Length: 196
Image 1 (cartoon, rainbow, N blue to C red):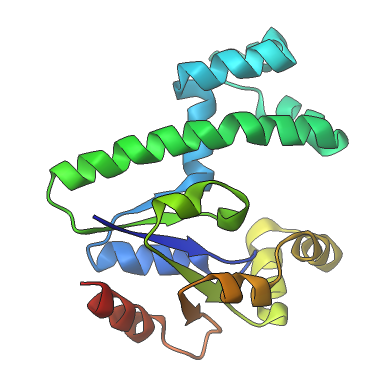
Image 2 (cartoon, rainbow, N blue to C red):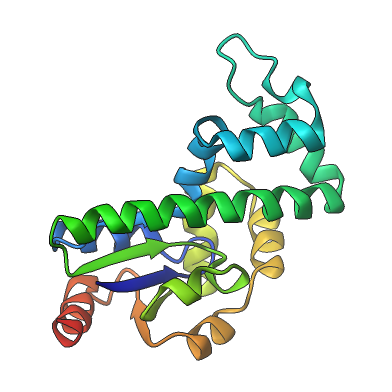
């Protein structure tokens, strides 16, 4: 099975590309949304989180992780954020590989995996190629402001902390421009045609 990595900075339109691929019959694993679920469903991850941060993380009415408390911990402590990432990334890897095996057994020939921090994780070793999703910075800022309700300054700070678009493009095999003027579907169609 051919695995396509999908990455790009905030507001670039990774989700748009993933949604189009899904419509084209290519299932896509969204690392960000899956990670949020795995805090509660992956017993290894849950035990490790409790071991490092205490039972208070799961003292909630439904027994699920207290995301507000976790956010408070990681946003004030860089070492805690690094530790959470060290615990979450292997859980995502395990879950993705199980998901991909199920697809392979069902006869799928292509799948995708979407991650904003793809190159900062082990994900590239699971991929056969990577698509960089790009857009001009001003468009990215406006999209993120609209989507998250964030200020321009907050979005620009987040962009500054991420890998630059030039670096992402340099490390990727394909590029999809999602600037609102260039059609995404034909770009993806050409990539999928080559891969098939």
